[in-house]
Amino acid sequence: MKTFFKLFIANTRQFFRDRMALGFTFAFPVVFMVIFGLVFSGADEFQYDVGLSSQDSTQTGVAVAEAFKQIPIFSVTEGELENQLEELKKGSFRAVLYIPEGLVETIARGEAVDIKLYYDPSQTTSIQIIQPVVREFVNSINQMLTQQPALVRLQEESIQLKELGNIDYLVPGVIAMSIMFLGLFSGLPLIQQREKKILKRLGATPIHRVNIIYSQVFLRLLLALAQTAIIIAIAYFLFDVAILGNWLMLLALILLGTLTFVGLGYMVAAFARTEEGAMPVIQLIQFPMLFLSGIFFPVEFLPDFMKPILNALPLSYLGDGLRQVMVEASPVFSLSTDFLVLGGWLLASLIISIRFFRWE
Image 1 (tube, rainbow, N blue to C red):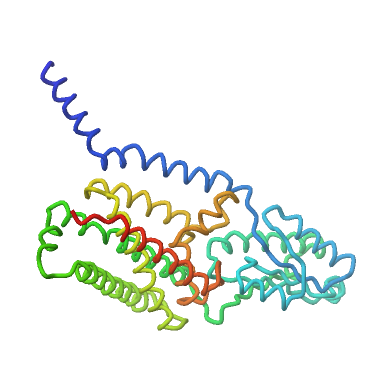
Image 2 (cartoon, rainbow, N blue to C red; image 1 turned 90 degrees about the horizontal axis):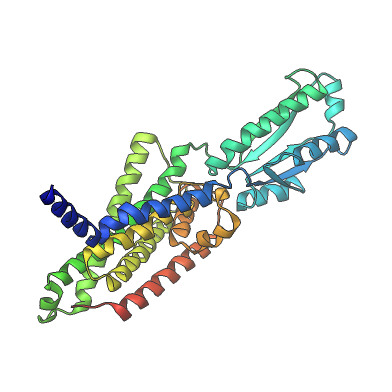
């Protein structure tokens, strides 16, 4: 028993000296719990911004419009249809409901009335919630006005010219995630070489230190292009995913995004003394970005006080830019803003890396 306790104490000391093990065992579960708690604890309180264009000024038409405004999960803004659709394309609205004039008169003649729901299918999670709610709303109108389910119909119209599926909107997020992983882990080879004093020995040779960095950055750029090409090829040949936007713009986003996350990876390498010390820092950077950047989870779930975090994360802008270029999704930010913010992150990380990086 005495031997057992000595081994137990030795293993305990070894465990607590391992920063990576400590991070994965205690720090990360706490971080994830806090993130998920903040994101999803207020899921019942959020609202979707939707537009309403009602052409029916009769008492019945006004009553229908007012009933739509009372749906708890909708924050409704009224206006002309053309203006509302423009806002939908800009990403200001998640959907627009159009109510034609003459509801009662048309129903009295025994003719069907089409209430139109315009939506952007790129907002996959949002529209999966909005569509059933609006369908139930239209069914309730049928029960109130006609007592039968056939005369008031919901006509759903996508603002996308090409009919796209969920996989089309998932691919940009997968590419953004892959670029993030590739870039953040780019600093580990430098840390390994510094630990093994390879960088010190290379510094004694005629090889310029800048060339060492350039060669690794160029490799990461080629790997980013290769992995993106593989993802797009699989998406195209297996799932019939089409790229709707400009290929040169897509190339520019991939290269800028890769450089940005490589810069962040080198910034970690500038401060981390060992590979074991760098891993928890990288994990602490990448996991919050996966959950808070909007590449997989809708930003509507975020409480208002967490929206500034979304607006600060480079992955938010890379994912938004890729969605705009690849599937012409409605923007969260303008494309120029995506480029400017990614460029700002690249510049800041390079300045910090150059200032604090140690070769020995």
